Image 1: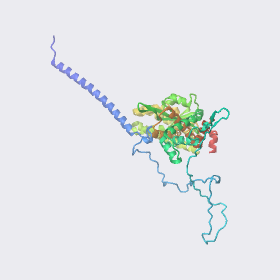
Image 2: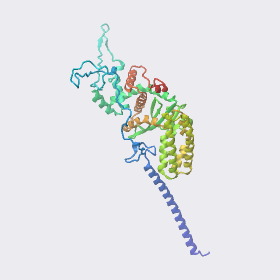
Image 3: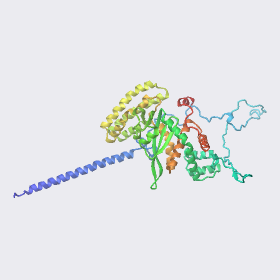
Image 4: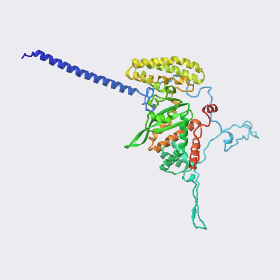
Amino acid sequence: MAEVDPRDVRIAQLEAMVAERDARIAELMAKVEALTARVAELEARLRQDSSNSSRPPSSDGPGTRRQPKRPTGRRPGGQPGHKKHERALLPPEQVQHAVEVVPRECRGCKRQLRGQDSAPRRHQVVEVPPLSAIVTEYRCHALQCPECGVVTRGEVPAHARSVFGDRLAALASLLVGKYRLSKRLVKDALSDMLGVELSVGSVSNLEGEMSEALAPAAAEALDYVRASEAANADETGFAQGREGGRAGRAWLWVVASALVVVFHIATSRGGKVARQLLGADFAGFLTTDRWSAYEWVDAGLRQLCWAHLTRDFQGFIDRGGRGGRIGRELMRERNRFFKWYHRVRDGTLAREHFEERMREVEHRVGQLLREAARRAEKKTAGMAREILQWEKCLWTFVDVPGLEPTNNFGERCIRHAVMYRKTSFGTQSEEGSRFVERIFTATTTLKLQGRDVLAFLTDTLAAHRRGLRGPSLLPALPVSQLALAA
């Protein structure tokens, strides 16, 4: 057998050690790269706020920077020559008491004065009379028939079998649905203001009755929204019921046309719910964010929200690098066309000129997004590719007069519900969710139409208790005629 050279053994050992070292170095380098990427991701999260992400402004911490407003050089408050805003006087037929203040003597020579001014200066003081509930007592007499001896007792009318009248029950639901009071606070408010004593359970029962009464009007409102020419849609997290001691996850959806808004609570945020709300054959223009639940909507009928895109572009800028430069150019294009859009809305720029100018902007934004998708850093490039998937939906508003480039209207409609969620922590049951849906549908819609909410709820409950058809949430006039009337 040939003798092994010790030097060859040593060389083999050294080579194995080097290979092991190289493998270890590669392993450690991979970990360093992964940890570096993780640190960068966490730092990016720390820099996120409402200006560069989908986080709401309420989540911003103290000292969060804001986009500074350009100084106007004007002092705060009303400007010289501005139109004065004063409380409008009620017409004479709505005045319950009039006090004639007639001077008796001249303030100069003290001579006695006679007569009255034909056009006196009017000053009105508004007061609320002492509040108290009106109690109606039904005395059900029992009478015995002289012929057969059967005793017959008079029955309370069906509409009066609840111990709480129509307007009082409507007021309890209004305090929850519009003024966001808890059931316990509603109980206290009715006791403090009206001297009416009722339990928390009674408030809940009245909500259930109001929910049933509103069901036909809410269903009619949904049909109206599905048939509308344009709508805004949005959704936000909600809580329904309890699962293992924790609130169950749900979502509050809103679909808003110009004068009718519909709310819906579901345990899913998926496209199936969006189809159910809008109807699979929805043919109007729909303004949304980029959430995947609306992907089934024809791209030619969909407008993506430029407020969300603005935050995305700000995210490009804040992450820096090549993507930051592209983000700044995208933001310049965004600012440019919004100035034109506001001029079109104000009537100082012709629509045809706006559409002509926008072709250059559309082309440039497309160029910048494609550059970001190819050359920007990983997260910015991924966001750019995602936006490019819906490039056609960025510009629908250019070709459709009256369609806005943002979903601000939808978000304004859902904001009240978001504040309710934060104080109520959601609902405990399906029945509770139905009440929230319907009362929000009614109060939000009636506000847009300028109608009396308490009167509507009172009439709705009164009709329900009497087995009659309740009032409708649909506008009495077409949108075009309502705009002219306003």
